[in-house]
Length: 276
Length: 304
Ligand SMILES: Cc1ncc(C[n+]2csc(CCOP(=O)(O)OP(=O)(O)O)c2C)c(N)n1
Ligand SMILES: [Mg+2]
Image (cartoon, rainbow over all chains, first blue to last red):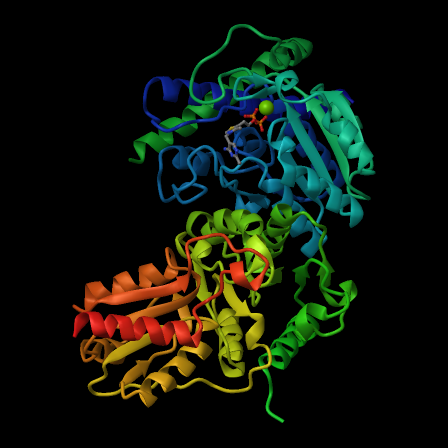
């Protein structure tokens, strides 16, 4: 099991280092459009990606605007992602997608159009048409959209092989969940006869909940903590940081992995900036 | 017996599902009536897909199917429901090729009805799609035009908004343009107004006016053909674009394009800018032959 936890950490470490560096690039005004950093939430995509590798499944993946970690965890090319941040035609979304609308054709990651929750019905429809195993990521706020909810209902009716992942950071920009609603996503989904679980972003907890993926629709509401601001480079202070906890768990090996990914990310940025 | 528009749609759908292995999505498709008899009696295993009463999400399901390259048909009955069905199609399917290089062709059968349906569902709403990029809009009213629309769609990779009208389903006739060297006035009718514009033209001719009629199949892209420009240039009192939608939309935009190209006044005549009620006295229908005759004569008298 330690191996799996380590594999997840390796992916998460790449994601975290990418976001940390991007944070600096935004601060340095090298990037001048809104950037949605996923630091703090990287164990969600990383755990799922490792499980998919183990199951030997390449699912169709539908992401939301905060998708860098999903892109990287599922093996999206870092150079194309950097080029996208630089608005280049060689970017993963032709330089049109910015941070919010990235895609990766090679890894079946479909881009988001910026309208919160659209990816839920689109992913459900794509799965209905192709019957391909599908993972749909959605924020705790976007999951509230009426069309997100009815899509989960239709996926249940049609028994589609979909994993709904609610990335629940308790925030819609800066508005907390308790201000917006008095119900929980996993309860609603359960009411729609979808097997649903409310869990933490603990990698092994996520991993363990993916055992029976794709026999039927499943929803995981995963509680997590966003490290940076909704958009751009800023932080609201010190919060619980799963990354630090996992790195400490692995001790020296963890620090080495972190260092390795830090170098990898810096090298990739250097190379792409020199290309100009 | 000649083929109706209804039979044409039915045959196209059968081929699209059974031979091309595609899907047709919509609400209450497999019930009595089969969408005005335009659908073959097929079920989910054949690709005839009943969606729930979740109009916004349903548009998204069809986009997902479109992304998978199956070229789905989407039946939206009636066009007024596009206000709920359009958002994900317009914001994702219509942009997907430009942003992500992934075309998302969808054949949207958007059906207008004759009226008596109150504030919600009557008439056409193609202008809703017209103002946003990434879609093509066509309003076939004859069997050949419908077949042409489908054939075009199958060779293209865009979202096609097919602005249908129930009143055309029984039609077997093709509609011809009439263009004179020196006409008094020119009618450019769209959708169901084409039938009543033709009636109005005949009436006006009986009264001694020379009236061109140039049928508008394509709403978007609007291509102003040279022969139409010539006809408008020679049309003494200008022209009028007739539509089954509100005038403040496709009709005004097309009229504007015409006026930029040819220095003639081009009027519009469509639904009145008010809400429709149920009773015939308060309904809001496309211009009748009598109303068209009256408006054309008014314009001519005002300018002579
Ligand atoms: C349809 C739509 N409504 C509202 C917005 C404005 N908006 C942008 S981000 C956001 C909050 C998203 O929160 P969540 O889904 O929880 O994702 P998170 O940002 O927390 O990752 C909102 C409401 C939008 N982009 N699209
Ligand atoms: Mg959130």
